[in-house]
Image: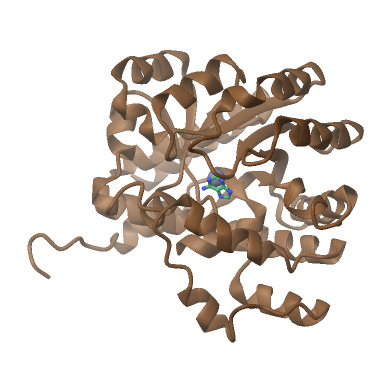
Amino acid sequence: MSANQAKPADAGMAAFIRGIPKAELHLHIEGTLEPEMVFALARKHGVKLKYPSVAALREAYDFHNLQSFLDIYYEGANVLRDEDDFFAMTAAYVEKVHAQGVIHVEIFFDPQTHTDRGIPFETVLNGIRRGLDEAREKLGISSRLILCFLRHLSAAAAQRTLDQALSHKDAICAVGLDSSEVGHPPSTFSEVFRHAREAGFLTVAHAGEEGPPEYIYQALDDLKVSRIDHGVRSDRDPDLCRRLAAEGMPLTVCPLSNVKLAVFKRMEDHNLKRLLDMGLCVTVNSDDPAYFGGYILENFLEAQRALGLTRADITLLAGNSIKASFLPLADKKLWLDRIERYAASAA
Ligand code: ADE
Ligand code: ZN
């Protein structure tokens, strides 16, 4: 290995990362649909796919920006037709991350991707919920659900989706904003988000993935979010970074996603460590793991390797994931104590 070639995480570090209790806060459930399941569901429902094989589909996962990914992501979601499909997808995800030390998940779902194809809102919600209920019973993983509005569609369409969610307030904890960012500023959705907050939902939003710092300001000031999803472009604005740090505003960062979608050319260029060192509440997440080459563990491992993260950094990131979650304070305290004891016993 030459001097400037990156080294893989050593076995001790990898075991430390796997074992530390952590929460995943930025995960699109439709982005966990592995090519094998796409093909199995296509067969089940008689859907004709553009790709001849699992391998050909996987090879198509060669993205150059967010839109090039979204085009293929929405096509993949087209094979989800009945409640069992949403259940199977969710069950497969929680089983994977259970083996990676995840103890709590906060999951995005995109109802409009399905309701616009004639799939009832309740079919989507009930299937995902059933998968999460089973995760709680069988694996001890707790969860929250976040309904995302597709920002390439109108505010009126988002409002209609919110209206559908109003009778499921027990099952959905927050609303978010995802899909094509540039040209679709958060402020477009100010009124829908106000209605959502008035109905008792928390709010989050994708901002500063490809979009400018201005979109992060809008998410904070107009949508009154509790977390910024991605937010990596905040580093172009020192005042914004100072504000995010002072407010303890979490950023749900997704390292592999950012490299796959060319937000950063190489993992070595990622600003995760710089943001962490500036005092921002950074968390590590997987975004769309079936498409980006890894689940939360692989995100931690790649970031650790490329950025030289220490055990103290990993412990901070795991603690941030709990602090930034929507868990009750008592649960946060319990998990933060466990993380502290885990790190101390591994030292
Ligand atoms: N939907 C699924 N993944 C997304 C991402 N990374 N950004 C915006 N919308 C998304
Ligand atoms: Zn995302």
